[in-house]
Amino acid sequence: MIKRVLTALVLIPIVLLLVLRAPVPLVALVTAAVALVTVQEFLKLTENYGVQPLRVPTYAAVAIFFLLLAFNVGQEKPLLSTDIFGIAAAFAPCIVTFIFLTIAMRRENLATGYPAAAASAFAFAYIALPLAMLVQLRQQWAGAFLILYLLLVVWSGDILAYFVGKSIGRHLMAPRISPKKTWEGAVASMVASLAVGGAVFCYSLPLSTKFLQWGLIQRRDGMFGLERPALLPILLLTAVLNIAAQLGDLVESLIKRGAAVKDSGTILPGHGGMLDRIDALLFAAPVLWVWAAWRVTQ
Image (cartoon, rainbow, N blue to C red; front, side):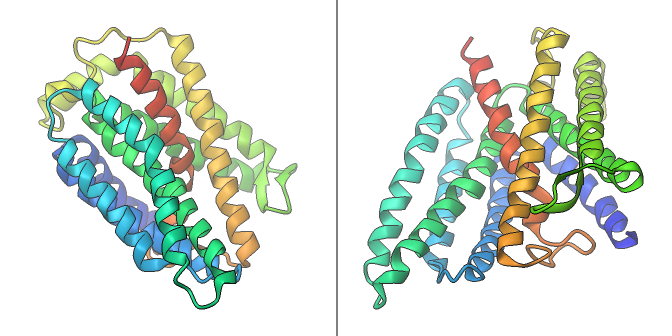
């Protein structure tokens, strides 16, 4: 527990500074590093399923995708960039799947080719694309504020679910997949996310003003000059984000349970691996990106 808290105390300020203050190309490069570590953990998990993964081609595909994104984020027209990214996000999984299958044809044991290509394609769609969506979201108007909102919604839900589930949780949600997750914790997670998400948007202007005064954001990164959405749509968005985050957590538990491991890795003391920490974001980030992309086209 102590290691878990200390790791969080170190990482949270770094993540917040990166989200709020770092230039977008730097955000893209750091996110690429996170994606590569997470993909490495995932491919290692697939070995427990009897898969011999295509490691180097998968790392190369992820790295190239983020490098292209890092070059693209320098544009000054967020709407154009969002459109381009949307097209790339639609076609990239198809293209890399063909590439992985082509590479797999060179294997001596052809029976290992399809599982390896499938694992690589899944890693790209499951890990690289959602993280890339966060980078592209950071470039949009008010992008830093939106990512802050997403992180607070996910973190608050995760924290309250942990403590409520541990203290008063009695009704198991998915005992075969995650024996410690309870419906009481899930409800607490939803309540926490709704409270925090609603508060963040209700006080979006004063919060943005304070961040600007402290030099944490530029004007385009806060909720300036944008009409504040009505509370009900934001609460609905927050509820969907919370559900997506909880599903992301359960899906990663399913993968680990099938691989017969407790954690995806050991890179973060007290937290396990990188995949263990960002599993909820991998499902929630695409939801927020779709909402934000729709918003900029209105």
